[in-house]
Length: 143
Image (cartoon, rainbow, N blue to C red; front, side, top):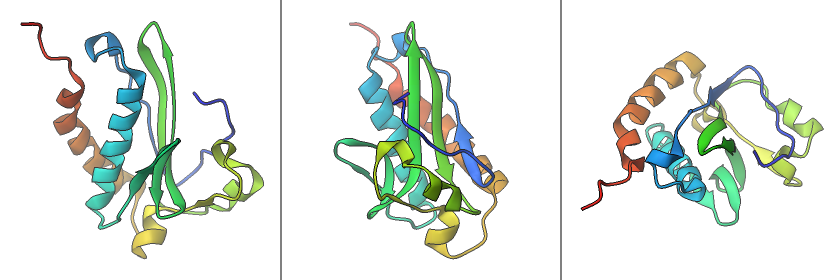
């Protein structure tokens, strides 16, 4: 993990993929960009125009952060993962400096879409996307 403070609470979808990166190029940066890309694509299903920001890990909607990523690796096995803000009270983020980034505004799917959405609903849809996209990480067989 990055080692900086974050907040986990109700209304977040927590994803802690456990991946053996020896089967996936032993490339942590590729893995982090894959998670970001997955979240960006997923948020597009809610018509949210999310993106990565150069030099900052996580997923953003303009200047607002919607997903935080903190991955650890030991013996090329990933630990920890991501927190996607789905719904609920984001004010606890005001008590910390999220991921060490000063003056960052946090947002959620609910805030961006202005409609009620549940973590359970989001988790079910995200699970389908992950199942479809995980093969992208695999290293092609040697010739």
